[in-house]
Image (cartoon, rainbow, N blue to C red):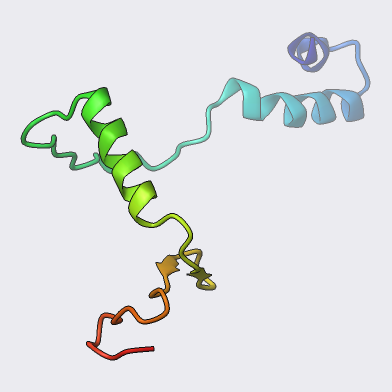
Length: 92
């Protein structure tokens, strides 16, 4: 529709100019940089859905009832249980 307006010599010049300016982004595509290709690597051996579910259940059971600490970046850290040694070999 915009093209019909700016191509029509019977239309007022102001309308033709505004129509041409509005139609330009749709008629001439904007040049954009090409995305860099992703360097993806497959896992050496695929894990079955059942095995993956079992691993997650074992991990959840091992961490059940533990207190957690969530950092400002969203990283979750499991706090040691009372009487359990932390990663530094020190008791709570």
